Image 1 (cartoon, protein in one colour):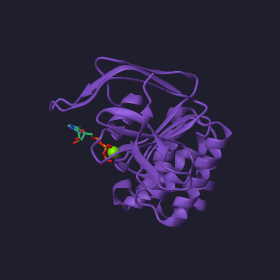
Image 2 (cartoon, helix red, strand yellow; image 1 turned 120 degrees about the vertical axis):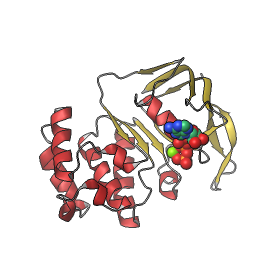
Image 3 (cartoon, rainbow, N blue to C red; image 1 turned 90 degrees about the horizontal axis):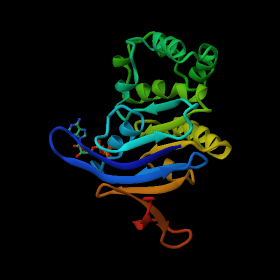
Amino acid sequence: MFTVKDLSFAYTSGQRIFEALSFCFDGAKSYHIMGENGSGKSTMAKLLTGHLESLPGMIKQLDKHKGVYYLSQNSLDNFVCINVKTELKAWSMIRGLKQVGEISMQVIDSLQLRHLLHKPVYKLSSGEQKLMALVPMWFTTEWVWVLDEPFANLDAERCAIIAELLMRKSQEQGNIILIDHSPWAKKLGFEELLLSDGALHKVVQSEPGKEIDVARGGSFEQ
Ligand SMILES: Nc1ncnc2c1ncn2[C@@H]1O[C@H](COP(=O)(O)OP(=O)(O)OP(=O)(O)O)[C@@H](O)[C@H]1O
Ligand SMILES: [Mg+2]
């Protein structure tokens, strides 16, 4: 899915987030990245999807023919239009996805969001914003997904719908990088990685059937 070589990154405020990091995300798999608040998970998602630029270092998308659907942790960052309905139209125009209108209405009904279509996105609740931002998942199932906290702010019924879609895509083709703190993410059975001290580590189970041992299970570096 992505290969990363010697990635270093610091915000202009000076804080060094990554230093010469190298790893490869296999497109056939799905990954769940965990890590403490402030460990750099969202920064990594932005670097992978080109919303931030690494200097120096190199990030290469291996399957270039695939689009990338990125869900930002900050829901409002996911919208370019003020109105939800126009946003969905813009999605179909920008991405050339003809089926967007039809599919998105089915999805909007299954998520019970139709009454919100004409509202400005900034007037939606946090959960409503998140759900609207997640609607493109249904028409980008062939793409690579980089999702930063899709379960945050959602009720259990909506979490179950999102989890089911994630599970289906993961089983059919992989190509998911999921960042999330919620128990829903842990249930999906994705390969678990811990971002800590600027490095990615595979997480191992301390004992079968027991809670995940977040002690480092091995380096994920190439
Ligand atoms: N635009 C920015 N300018 C300066 N520093 C930033 C910026 N965005 C994030 N940071 C800092 O970079 C570090 C990593 O932030 P990041 O948002 O990647 O963490 P995170 O692992 O996603 O945390 P959380 O679990 O809380 O979402 C934090 O210390 C944060 O304060
Ligand atoms: Mg984050």
